Length: 537
Image (cartoon, rainbow, N blue to C red):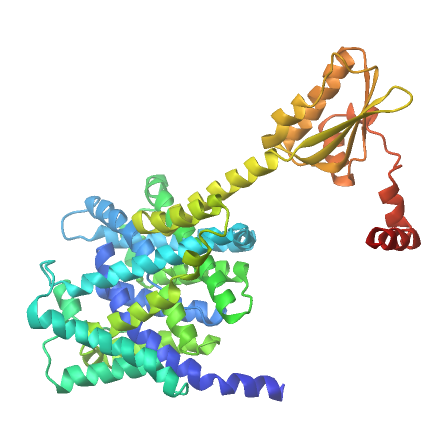
């Protein structure tokens, strides 16, 4: 117990410093995503605080940071606009419909955790994961380019652009060089403090967090504690029409939130060589979104950029996420004036270093070493993440991978044919029998010209789905229609259970007796050892 406490205390400094750095990086992100969704900046900041705190305490992945994200904001913008149309001008009904949707989104995510659907993230292939990482790195990079434009959408020019570029480069240089001198200081936090000091004391004319908020139409970072939104129940009618309106949005947001959170969890697992709990994360994300919706937040999920800042800053425990959330709240309550002076260029520099660390540069090296189908999946997922969103990209990648896998396995079905001395023809089936291999399976048999006695040996095959059951059933009927006898041998226990459940007819044709030498070897350890020795010789 003492050793456990000592290890946790040893990393407390890293968790705290990393958490403060993450909180600084959360501010412009949350504000920017609020503007994307069409809501007040405080709605995004409250979401970042509440979701970040709840998932840090109860989530399935210590060290992972959650908050308001762009992937969700791009869906919310149409929800808010449509919701506003239900009420009078200036009534802002869209905001309350957003809160109601976030609550329903959280309920869906908690149901996913209760049903243990989080485990399905393991079905995501590695090329999809690499494509997701590369696509998200590009999205983060493109998002930072907007910071080089003025309020009218025009690129900075002249000294303003050069000053911005210089401060971004200085931030990146500090983050790159400081770890080579000492690993005891958090490079991201030091870089932000140094660049902020240069901008403030040098009286440089640069974009800051405060000017960014005001240019977007906000009044500033200052705010109070989140308040319970009783108006949700007064302004949003809880009837079938409302469910039909917010239901599809809630399902889409829940899916995007869970996919992004579980993919980020997977990535952090790889970086830290540990393993998170996917179902627990589903529950925490769902609970956090319910609370956020009730207290005036826009909802959210895991944030890959901030999670990587935290991990690279040494944040490993739940303390880092808790500190990030509480520090963000402290900025809102007490330090808004100071945080508004932080140059946007410092935060852009930090995010550019995150992009460099996020992008899977190894994917370029392996392009000519992996199957062409995996290359297509990797590039497709990267492109779809940039063009559409993460959910569409991941689903498309998994579908493509599944189709390729099915096609490749469909080609592996084989049938070795031989005749016994008693005139029985034996078909030895090799490979998986499922919907993709049914046509090839049926082509192996010559029903009209086969002898009276036929055996189908499944010792190297498995019956995988209903299509396979139906194909075997039809095969049996065709042989019997020709007046011939067919027997099925060496089906595994689970395959026999499937067939018996589908039709009592299979009890007449399946041979229960096992006469394959491999089965006897498994039952006789000495014989198995002897056989293994002979095989090695």
